Image (cartoon, rainbow, N blue to C red; front, top):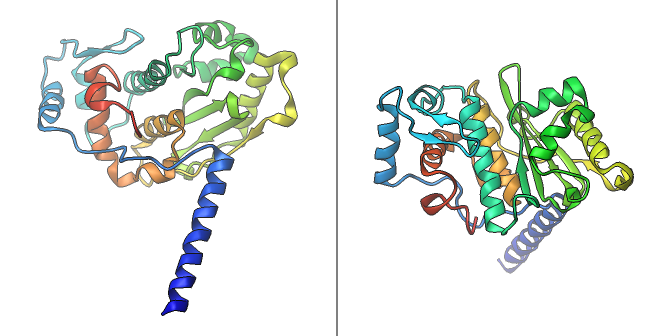
Length: 277
């Protein structure tokens, strides 16, 4: 019995060491609490009311000023098999960046987390980094502050499939999270991200310092949840949380409800704060 307990203790210690080593490499940590939790009765009622609202009524407005109406909730977000649209995904991802910057007291000109719309990626592909100057300036991303930004979130929609590109300048990494590949990203995407980094940094770019990394994340096994994965992975990466330990695919029907509530709430505040995650 004593030998068995000793062996189990050694195995536990070994697992903990491996987890610590993985966290050190990725810069990600386990969540301190559950990410996806049930809505209160009040919020369930408010989300349900959005599904039944007048089609022309503006139910909320994103940080970009995009009105959200019943269609965004009743057709594009809340049904279990609905494909999320731009309004929902960009609205949620901008709220993630806003939460991080508000929490860290980062002024607009010096963000710690910044996000792009889905227009950025096709522009990068068609015009190269040099054709993205206006979009970079609008997001307050420039050579002088680039290495002080923690996380840059770039949602990608290709062939009706949403994925997430992430640049973490402070850690000198680029990544691509594809829910169909359990977090493993496209080499093409990561190479293009490195091109962008080199363009922004110019003479400050040190190739040996930068690397493309992959993060483990829950895998998508259906044909409709890619947008929900993209938003949820963005939350995790922006907060430095390991997505593989933060949620499961089975929780995503509830996550749809929570995303709807966050949009109605005007962001990750109050009942939806990401504090202590």
